[in-house]
Image 1 (cartoon, rainbow, N blue to C red):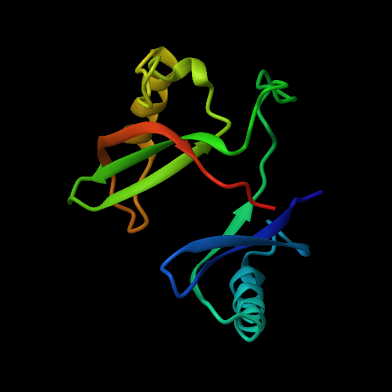
Image 2 (image 1 turned 90 degrees about the vertical axis):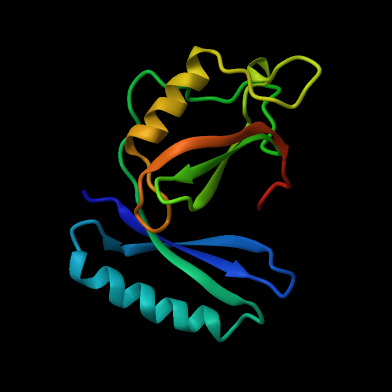
Length: 155
């Protein structure tokens, strides 16, 4: 059975801050290519009527099976608010960022907030440069910033 699609809306407020909401579409499955955009457009209009902010981005998330060998439970001290932020520059100079929640503090240089470039972090960096792109589909080529980042939890 095909997995359902999730609509991801990024909503901006009057202070320039953004938050995301996810809406699962149990009847919209990965094989329903033609209905994805129509359903997202319809639902986005409904949400737009309910908010005082604005919808800055619409995305569709397709679940895929988790690979074997990854953790299936969090460490007892894992905290969603503790993370690491990475800021990247694309080939044409545009910057983008991503934050990884529950980032392992063993990968932070002691007495600093800097990410330690141990093998696991370097593997991530190499993969980002090799495969990831910014929101305009331009390849990333430089890591500008990597440090511990404390964010608020999302519910």
